[in-house]
Length: 364
Ligand code: OGA
Ligand code: NI
Image (cartoon, rainbow, N blue to C red; front, side, top):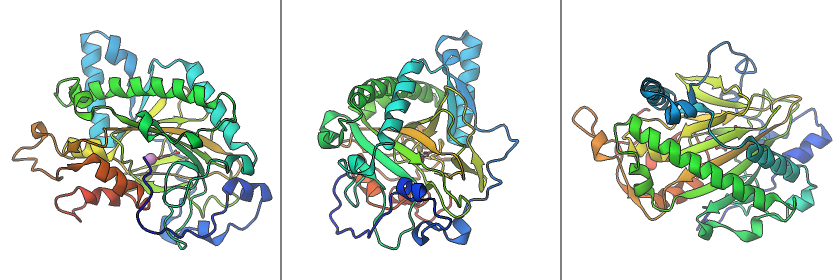
């Protein structure tokens, strides 16, 4: 993850949003104020809709024949029509999730100078700070991030793994191991839902790359003016997002041109399809645009794992998913090249995936 960009990056001063929030300004600094068209509507998070699909992993793994079949069909619909789902009964010990949430929170509440021992260099995406900022006039997100490459060990930057909280590293190791297993299991069923052999992705991905990003969104006096995280799709194959307990509703996905909130379900994990699976499935499964909004009084924490193929591999649409009715929509490319392209461009909806499109500018 996070290669140092080969171009000079001048980002100017970036305010730390937790510090801004401590000062409780009534006005929000200009750099955080979004253009009219990009501002969230505060009514968006009040919804009566049923929300994104729910997949019960225990039914997929242990259900009887009919249950397994019906759950695989639901998984297929979730990936095709939503690109997002929440997974219940995922098999990960709740203590593991709680411990991770605790150390992440403990990290964010440290004094600024302590967190700044692990700085995210301008233009890179590992460490503490704001990622995806490349210029002085770019709008900023109301969010503090702490991101680390985890697997394989060669992508780690050990200097950025904090020694405070004392048990952070150990907890992150345990957490990452569990999430990695979950990703492998989910990819097996995703393959099945496409009518493919269960181990097709695991074989293709070789030693998968795994990175974690903790996003902390402090309250904001003007949630109507700012975004917690700019709209984007994820560059991963699969993303696993854990929402902190008692967090405000903040994650929104774009469905049929409308931003829909993802209502947190206790102990569930939010899963989404990343750009890599969109390409591999020739667009059958969608990497859906999403963003985060903030709350006037409540803070919010999310712990996000990105799971992707080895940088070494070449990929493109799988032949099984290309035919006369579904002509090939993406070119073949090296995954490391795509990752580099992704982390050296600002978050801008699904713009990054133009990299792979055979006909750029076709709407999606
Ligand atoms: C991300 C992401 C959303 C959230 O980190 O890629 O989409 O709710 N986060 O924090
Ligand atoms: Ni995302």
